[in-house]
Length: 218
Image (cartoon, rainbow, N blue to C red; front, top):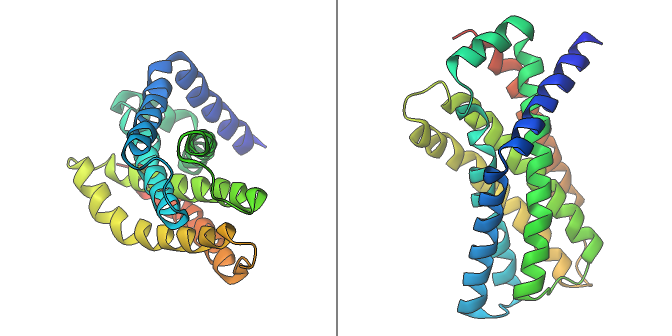
């Protein structure tokens, strides 16, 4: 019960900071709006496969901007304070929970803007919304894990790029493969691929819980 209380308290702390520092949220929202508007000016309403590829590429950059800062904004003094009041697993689980919520919200906002500006070629709306939520959650988990590692290194951006590329590209390919099926009524969602993505997500959570305590000690 104490662990759940620590996770809730740390999650609430991140939520209050995000509400207090609203420039961060609005900055990401401005990035989404500007990117979608530029795509609209360049190609109006692209075909389904192009629309799908652009959507997931935008999700990738949104996640980098929204999630990667989660550990970088924590000062050394604040980390020492957290070290004295909570355990490493509680801390990283709270970060994973908050970043998942933030990225799911950003994914839904970007889907709405894509539909308004670039049209909506999706034939299976509910299924695609579910995939968007799953994709936002998956990306947030990976980049939260990478941000935790990069925060302990001096070359933060380089570490995230080196570690993130072999992890995130296969995940994006799986998400695009899944989402390609919602643009045609005759296609069915491959549940093996869906289960693979979910399994990868739980693997990232497990790795975060196992490995973060070693970073926490530093």
